[in-house]
Amino acid sequence: MIQQAANTSEPPFIVELIPSLLFVLVTVFIVYKLFGFFEMAYVEYIKKRLFYNHFYFKKKTLNKEQRFILSKYIKLYNGLSLDHKVYFEHRVATIMNTMEFIGKGIEVSETMKLITSATLVKLTFGFRDYQISSVERILIYPEEFYSQTNKTYHKGEFNPAYRALVMSWKDVLYGYEIDDDNLNLAIHEFIHAIHFYYMSVRRKSTSAAIFLDSFQELVTYLDANAVLKTNLVSSGYLRDYAYTNQFEFLSVIVETFIETPIEFKSKFPKLYSKVKLMLNYNFNGY
Ligand SMILES: [Zn+2]
Image (cartoon, rainbow, N blue to C red):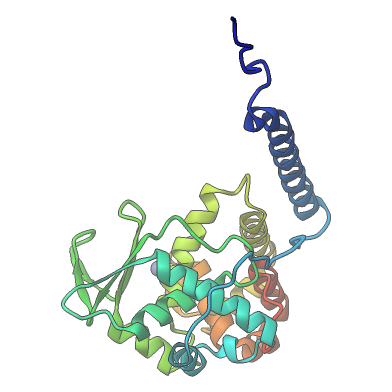
């Protein structure tokens, strides 16, 4: 007697699901691409503004001691709304978890990790694109270090080939302890790294588009206003090093903007508003 074979023509449940899964994936991909396309068009042709900035499935948190260190050193953090503080902490925790910290003749402390991570977070807080691939590791020396790149002693440097920021801790701290002299080593070096990263993703990142296009507008505006340019240089408000090249100009103008916004706004209001737009910095105190 021949036994009736089990019905093998029915495909397993998971196989039946494949077309639906593919449909969902393709739809999500198309929506994602369309979103990117429309946001970039909006930023380039209508207004330099992101459709949204903060959205996280699961937010990382900092402990009480870590929050205390943030509030001690990062003025911007103290002025944020409660919601924004939560986003700020999430971003700092994310950077601290993904960044490699290397002490060179010094033990890396929690404060070092927090301050350096929070510097990146504060500079990119107006943007969605804050996890810059141009820096994967931060090397910390106790003080000035001998740089093999150009055979001199440095306080800090950004090394794109090694995807590293190298900084003297003494000078990072000095930058934060004296917070109104328009000198902040960590801000200076991170702006070089952010600039470099955004240049590499300009076509796909709306954050990069806002930052780079605004900077270009700022430079063009200065070039077209000889009197303003002369006034800016002769005022000495930006230290001389700013005029070394466009990269240094960018870093120094951001250091100045972050440290003395009220003075900047009153002395050079047009330039101030261009830097504010460049960083999308709509926060308390700016
Ligand atoms: Zn520099």
